[in-house]
Image 1 (tube, rainbow, N blue to C red):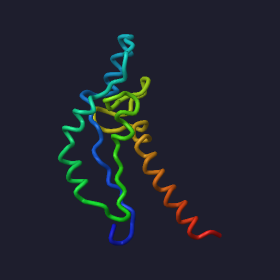
Image 2 (cartoon, rainbow, N blue to C red):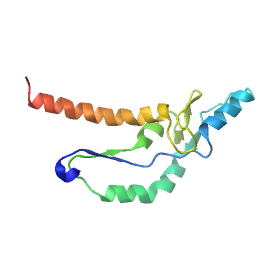
Image 3 (cartoon, rainbow, N blue to C red):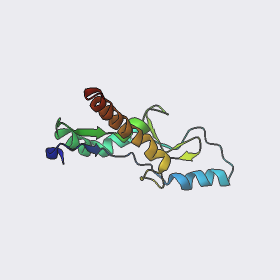
Length: 129
């Protein structure tokens, strides 16, 4: 695809939670418990688990039209320092412990959409009507 000049999105690992986010939230609601902090995982745990994958992806090098999407930028250190969040104010970002749900995917997809908008803007600017 890259050799054909197509844009390829390389999605880096998604942080995993230690337990099912919806199940955890359901239990909190069932027992009327208010959590002090959102369900999360330590960022350092995520980094340790994904170090080899990140290294392999980074070794690919800079290639035109290869766009690197890092879900950790949306989910880690953004809402809770040194943690990757699994929910926000009771809204689950995952459908289980490691697959993003609609709300979680929306956070990651926003990075992809920003790139697409930038490419479209540059093409339009290069070829004005």
